[in-house]
Length: 119
Image (cartoon, rainbow, N blue to C red):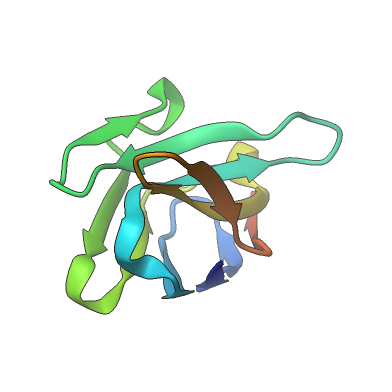
């Protein structure tokens, strides 16, 4: 089992910044890709950014140039630096982790952290 705990959400004005953190614990040895997703009220959960063990990143078009994902493997953590925030970025942000062995692949999710951007 892997536990993921997000932090860093809150209320910010448009144009502001927030930094989200996600700490993994438990059976962390087989964690590969990690990522951030978000879900706004009445909408489906959508990918924001992902990062591999080696540091390769992938971003949704709507955050390119504004958000930066990073990870600290020594601290089993992944981060999301969010700049130039817009009201449409308001959502619950979830961290996830892909846990793989030769025979098993599981995806774990955190409980989410609320980000609210006021206009």
